[in-house]
Image (tube, rainbow, N blue to C red; front, side, top):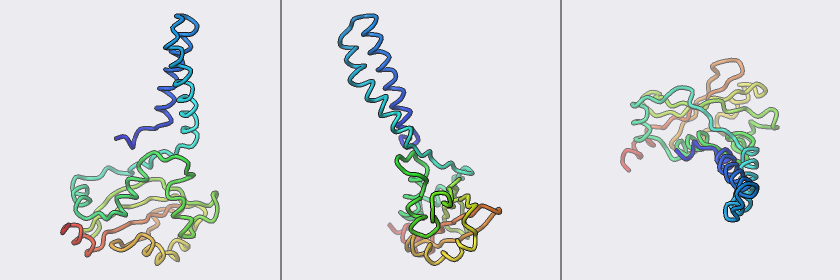
Amino acid sequence: MLRQISLGSLGLVVGGILTVIGFSAYFFSDNATLNLVGFFYGIPLLLGGFALKAAELKPVPYSQPSSPEVVALREQQATSTQNQIRKDVTRYRYGQEAHLDSSLEYLGLSPSDEERPILQGVREETIDGAYALILEFESPLIPFKTWIAKQEKLDKFFGSGLHVKLSQPAEEQVEIALITTPQAASEQVAS
């Protein structure tokens, strides 16, 4: 739950309240303690909230809710890579331009900030009895044939226990399905 709370908004609200209390105490009640709280805590929290809000990257939404069957399958089969990606992209991030930006750059799918594909959604499915995490990208400037050319690199990048399947549901969209392989699924059940 804490992953779904914007620290920038929290800083703005708490800092704003403390700052208003401090200024009110200074101008209206002559209460030195509340005045100091506003100046020494409220203003820095307010400024910190503004800074975090400026560097904030919102979580990627689930494009469709995960069924209880898929959630149960995730708990049995999901690899640490799948769990890490799912948790990272569905929480607020700070100081990043886009979700998975360094990964896309490493894979050669982000030659510049303007051409970088943007992660629009994530969903979980069952594919041939295996758990799959599907990343939905908007990729207007990187053609699908470039993604296909990177297939082998994608398989190696996401590590053992996963098979990567690429698809293009629409003209400027690309989906990466990270599918648990049978041996990885049996290892997860055993542990």
